[in-house]
Amino acid sequence: MKVLMFGWEFPPHIAGGLGTACYGIVKGLAYNGVETLFVMPSASGDEDQSSARIINASDVAVDFLEELNPNTFLEKVQFLHIGTNMLPYLDPQDFHELVETERKRQVRDFKLNYGQKYKFSGKYGSNLLEEVARYAMVAGTIALQHKNEVDVIHAHDWLTYPAGIAAKQVINKPLVVHVHATSFDRSSDNNIDTRVYDIEKRGMEAADKVITVSDLTRNIVINKYGINPDKVVTVHNAVDFSSRDEMQVERALKEKIVTFLGRITFQKGPEYFIDAAAKVLKRCHNVRFVMAGSGDMMNRAIRHVARLGISDKFHFTGFLRGSDVQKMFALSDVYVMPSVSEPFGISPLEAMRSNVPSVISKQSGAAEVLKYAFKVDFWDVDTMADQIYALLNYSALSHFAANQGYDEVNSLKWNNATLKMKQIYETLIK
Image (cartoon, rainbow, N blue to C red; front, side):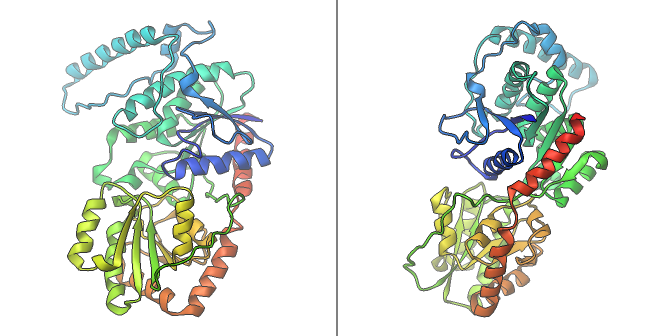
């Protein structure tokens, strides 16, 4: 069995958990006898190809081996361009004229670019929507090139859904979309990006199966996007620790350390962590709090810490990657993930693998599978502070949570998760 998989990033060049999850998935699929052609917008050439063949979309010209001419392709792939400026207040006639003008522009631009390569950045910059659209265009070419060897198409998160749709439309193979997060996780219900929501919904509707990383996410897909529950399946994430060595670090400080590690954004609940820190520091002085990460709420978080008068006990490290993440966990005594909405959340698994007891929000997918993590509603700052205090001051409790948590996360393997994915594939290609 062979899968044509569309992703956006792949180790060692990653900006978040999506690339790490994709790496674990292709390794697990290989263990279960599934070959993967992994497509990404911009490959660097140093990606690990022991478990998957990497296809660099930047090296692929928009060319269809004379099997489809541009007009036929445009008829099949109805989703090529996403406008970066949406105009919500148009009357029906104006809207029709706008759509027709845009359609003609697409055809003109496509013919001009036919046979050309597009150099993707593979980043998350201001032209992201344009890259998503062009990625879909190149995906059609890649699908045609491999149509006789591919059994199923698998697309990860909204960035690749248009690519998955394009591939399905030109080679008529089953499509699986993998929901790692939704618009409702990235922002509040009243402030979602409608352009991204529309892409997500279209991808889910076009898919033959939708895989979600937790039951929490599955419920959002069903209730917020109106997707038939029969085609939405939960496969919980795992963590690949096979290449990770135990890290020993020498601590320069005598104080204990409580860590938040993640994007400093609304979704991750940084302000709840800061409020809990202030409450703990009123009762316990032999502790420092660390916020490791970056994001659009960083300056606001720094000001919040200053207002509470805890700056001398609170540290911001900026974004960490690779071995620095491991080092941070090795230095920590407690890890906290107070996410407002977390589709899964791999970081507490990584912390527990480093023998760090963890406090996580009940509003996370990880809470569905972690028995030995302390769980709290993200908004319940008093309880969160009590749990942090207990883990810092009662060594028997801390050792129990660390030891049991270590054994628990080591049982959550990608080999088991991807076996479920293989079984999903099999139901679609019979």
